[in-house]
Length: 308
Image 1 (tube, helix red, strand yellow):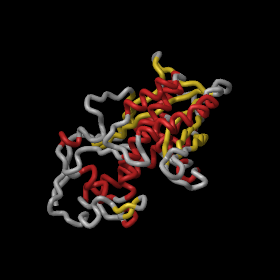
Image 2 (cartoon, helix red, strand yellow):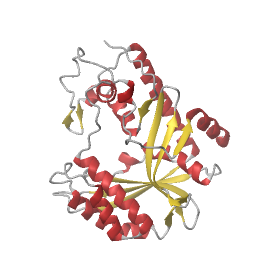
Image 3 (cartoon, rainbow, N blue to C red):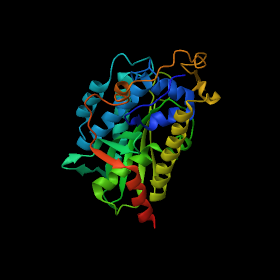
Image 4 (cartoon, rainbow, N blue to C red):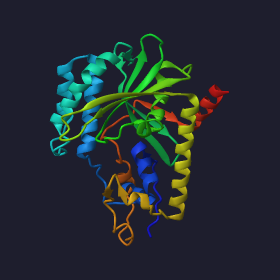
């Protein structure tokens, strides 16, 4: 078995940590070993990404045509199918406009350095071996209470009645709230997470519905997020040291689809770890520079002091 000894910090994200907790062997094959260098979009991820771009544009500019144009330009033709394509996405965006108009009666997009707080990128340096990176869709402020919120646009084809179990305890947007400290100062104690959800409905996706879920979050929630990342990283370090990444049965069938590595994950002879150059490109857009950089130790210390 090859030994993994990178000399640069390893990129992590919310989706990467989901892969780790889905199956450690899947995480190793997908992100650490050679042969999977390129991050592949799918019709589902492309739909969600383009929908989020249109939502952010309309919330800031309130220009329907501009929002449609940006959604259309963001959509890549090769990532479409019968149910998830650019026309379904634009129809979903048009269905969302009345809901955004109602939302804007109480909220406005925050500006930072005279620019809208949209698609802000941040880097969280965990330690010398790992860093976490993410992008925030939109930061909002309530017009009446002054309270701040992080808005995340989502799409789903799930037809379950109650979506709360899918989003209420999601860690993704909790981490995004560290940007609010940088934008509005550390006096902020509580904030809201708003999920703006486009549901495709049944059939071909042209019968959509819109839901807005709001969940209050506290400094304790944010501290728990730091701790959960720390625990994941400690487990990952141990696996790297032991050079062992276990297989988990729950990852073999994921969202009713067999894992792409099913039946081959037990073959180790061709395992070759990525080089430092390959690792440096993981999950990042070429030439990307982060707008904010944070350090885990400093944030944990700050949050403990504020809670006390």
